[in-house]
Image 1 (cartoon, rainbow, N blue to C red):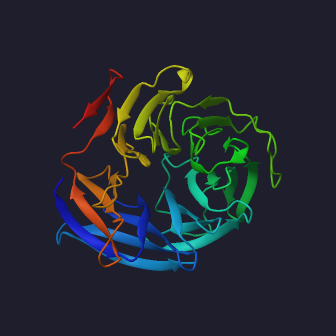
Image 2 (cartoon, rainbow, N blue to C red):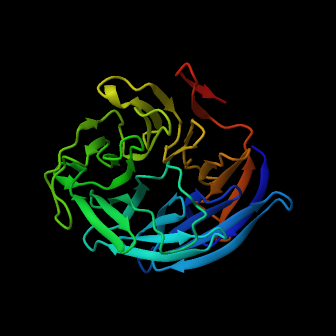
Length: 348
């Protein structure tokens, strides 16, 4: 990869999502070990191909760290280290207006979220904050829960609270990731620090509303990973295919119909696979965060251009700042679902 541009942020760049052809939103997070306080910011940035630079369009300081961001049409959701979810309305000018929030005091950090309609075609030209997409959002928490909210014009309504989804030796484990199956929106996948990923059918898990359910039963459990399952993504067009990543340094690709068998593909990344990203063009980009003395790399492919966004979060920085790098998409390691043969291949 060749460097195109960079910009400097105050805190660790923890999450990033594309919001337009050249724009993206970045959430930051940092723990002050002295005060035990968590801080974060929300930045809207744009890569300018003419000047070869990253412009910060706007930035907002948050009461806590931003741990994950997802964009669904004209709606953006963020989960925070304070154990809350915030939902924003996005305009064509990439202006975010907060619509609704929800908080769970006993769940610790909110770690990830997903929209059930994230891959659907949604009219992003609707600029009225009153015209809110009716959809569901799933959130995973530090206390091992999966919480599903319904987003409506009048707020966020909790419809499922599945507690203790991931446990080990009688202790609850963090649920690092949760995603919807975009081809069957009643299906949710979760991955946790118990080294397992699980599939859940929301029609049969029991509980509902504000009721906390500890007896939810998954439809499938897989423990092929030997460390915490930190990332997952469903293929946008292949309804049975998804990928998982773990800090056991493996990215695995699965067929949901045969989880008891070996994965379709097992890539040994050599470093912790902390993020798996899909594009909407039938390509699955397996991406990892690399822990190394030089820093941490996180790549996000922009599907409408030949540019990748690489977020570099130095573990040790002389100036204490954190840098976003924009790279040309020339060389990366990815797994591509071959059309129409249906074979997975590894590209370098």
